[in-house]
Amino acid sequence: MNGISSLPNYINGQWLTSNATEYLDVINPTTAAILARVPLSPASEVHQAAEAAAVAFESWRRTPATERVQYLFKLKNLLEENFADLARTITQECGKTLAESQGEMRRAIENVEIACGIPMMMQGTNLEDIARGIDEIMIRQPLGVVAVICPFNFPGMIPFWFLPYAIATGNTYIVKPSEKVPLTMQKIFKLIEKTGLPKGVINLVNGAKAAVDAILDHPQIKAISFVGSTPVAKYIYSRGAANGKRMQCQGGAKNPIIVLPDADMEMTTKIAADSAFGCAGQRCLAAAIAVTVGEARARFTEAIAEIAKKRVVGNGLEQGVEMGPVITSQSKTRIEQLIQQGVAAGAELLVDGRNPQITGYEQGNFIRPTILQNVSPTGEIARTEIFGPVLSLIHLDSIDEAIALVNSGQYGNMACLFTSSGAAARKFRYEAEAGNIGINIGVAAPMAFFPFSGWKDSFFGDLHGQGNHAVEFFTQTKVVVERWPNNWSRQF
Ligand code: NAD
View 1 (cartoon, rainbow, N blue to C red):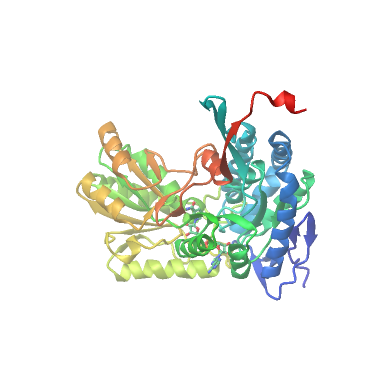
View 2 (cartoon, protein in one colour):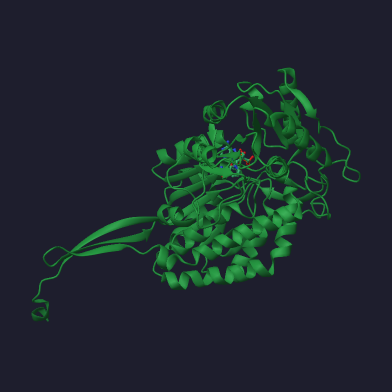
């Protein structure tokens, strides 16, 4: 239709046109250009992928781990060779700057590299002679068919928190990308195809609710990783778990940073601005609230306002641009409404980034960095995940009050402290209720060899993505106890 291509699914080693009756436009958030049409695949196409993956599993699980990771080595090289193109695609469909997209792809590749160590990481344990002549061993085996359901904000990286570990441990796989940003995975699957991976080992099904529900209900799918908003994470966790599946569901966030008066204020404000406005605030680890303690208030407020006003906003593909648009026009409207709601509730607009004029990109979903001050710690604006370039300032008198505020939140994804006091840093690290802590640094997604996830309503499940947790999540242990009679040779 009008030269706009409809995206295929990749099932059982073949690119297949979906039988979907509904399609969504994939829209460049910078220019509003329609990039492609994505099918809302019906349940039958998830079933087809699950059946193909189940057949492939029988042979894939028997493929030695050392052989399985050879495909990952090939994939790593292909991702490196296509690095620039993949980063560009992320910027086109997601809006972030090219530097941010490159950072995202670097982290994706790092997960492939780490998963190449699976032959060592999935080793079991054993103890000989638990009783005389009897040995007990624990082995790890793959689960079967597993799947990931992805959000829009990291189309290249997030599937890789799970996928390389899942297949290296011997599982077969289904990826359901966000319907808002399906193009990066289309390109990555072209590379997966080039690795020569046996058909059915990794499958791609585009879609939204119908495809997700089919994944949640399919009896062949044994485990599901989800990353997205908290209400959807709760729904997916409960429905998948009720169907007996192993689940790990990462949800939303509302991340606070605390600034003490003894912090290096120049460094702190720069880091706080990067954390709040990087990826236009659409990161689950973005700073959303800055709590200044005591005399930190005046210096921090003045400096962060200056940085926010100077931020270069525009097309992420252009050099010098520091921040792109938010993902959709609906998202822009929602964020602007939340800002207005905060003002109506008594907050002051220190920097108002609404309705900017970005020459040449009048149709883009732009909001400039926005700062609200005197935000009520208990008000809606301090509690709701905005997921845009909006920082709320709250002032308190002591670190104890600040930590109490951090711990009173619904979410627990990330919390940061800026200080030059080791004692304050230790107290914060010890007491703050969050899965990721930053001390004088904004938290980026942890390196691939650390597990990544939040606490409280930022995570539902037990084992997290990446590193050893991924190996645990994608394998089940089997304990074998053995006795071999000494007279075995006489049997033949
Ligand atoms: P989302 O919850 O709207 O969508 C995520 C996925 O769920 C998509 O694939 C979508 O198709 C599917 N989905 C949406 N509604 C559904 C429904 N009713 N039933 C079944 N499936 C449904 O999230 P999003 O807007 O794409 O991503 C942003 C959210 O993700 C933010 O809340 C952000 O904090 C969170 N996030 C969290 C992490 C983390 O590590 N904790 C990382 C990235 C993003």
